[in-house]
Amino acid sequence: MGFVTLEKREHIGILTISRPEALNALNSQVLADLDETITQVEQDSEIYVVILTGAGRSFVAGADIGEMKQFSCIDGKRFATRGGQVFLRLENLSKPVIAAVNGFALGGGCELSMACDIRLASEKAKFGQPEVGLGITPGFCGSQRLPRIVGVSKAMELILTGKVISAAEAKAIGLVSEVYPPEELMGKAVALAEAICANAQIAVCESKRCIRMGMQTDIATGSAFEAEAFGVCCGTEDKNEGMGAFLEKRTEKHFRNR
Image: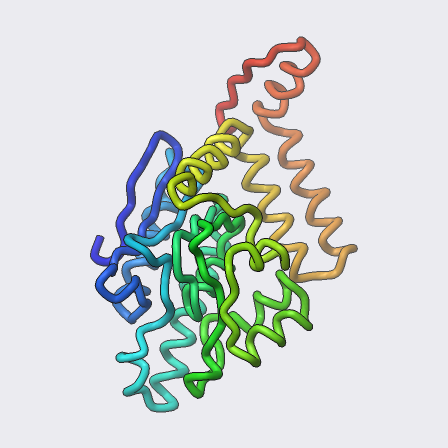
C-alpha cells in the first residue's frame, strides 16, 4: 500500500519501504503507510515474524528534509510525535521484527532499525544520527533507543558528532547482530525468521514481551512479569507438545499456537 509493501512468504511478512527515488526518506505519507501496514500485520494470524527492509540501495536514508525545512515549532513537534508513535507500535508489535538493513540507515532510518527486535546489515550499510548537522535533534526516539542499545558514552559520541559509521563498526558496538555480503542479506534474514517460526509462537511472543518490558523497568518487576509469562505458557498445548517431544526424543514437533 502506497510507500510500504507487504509480501507474505508462508509465515513471514516482508515489509519494504519503497520510495527509492528519495532513498526511502520518511515523510508524513510514508509514516501513515507504515502505520497502516503494521495494523495489517498485527491482525494477520498467519504472519509469525516480520522482516523490514528498504527498496533499492537504501534502507531509509532519514526523514524528508524537504518536508521538514518548512516546519514551524508546532509542525516539528507534531511530526516527531507521530513518527515516535508509529515506531513504538512497531517495537511493541507482538511478533518479532527483523531489520534487514540493506543500505543507508541515517537519522530516521537508524531510528527505524532500532525499533526492530533484531538488526542484520549488509556490508554496504551505513548508520548514523546526523541531525545536529542539520540544526535539529533526533526526532523519532534516537536519543532514547541508541544509549539503551550501545551505551550512553557511544551514543553521546555518535549523536553529538553526527558521525556515520560502517556496518562493521555497527556490529562492533552492538548496534547490529550480524553483517553479510549484500547478496546474502535477505536470505539470511529469511533463514533467521524461519528459525523463529519453527518454535512455539505463544512462547516466542511472550519472550519478546518479557524482554521489551524488562528493558524499561527494574529487575524485580521484570522477574515478576517473566514468572507470569512462564505460567501462561505452562497452560498451553504447545508446552505439552514441546516437552513431550523432548521426553520422547522426537525431533519433529507440531505446535498449534494454543
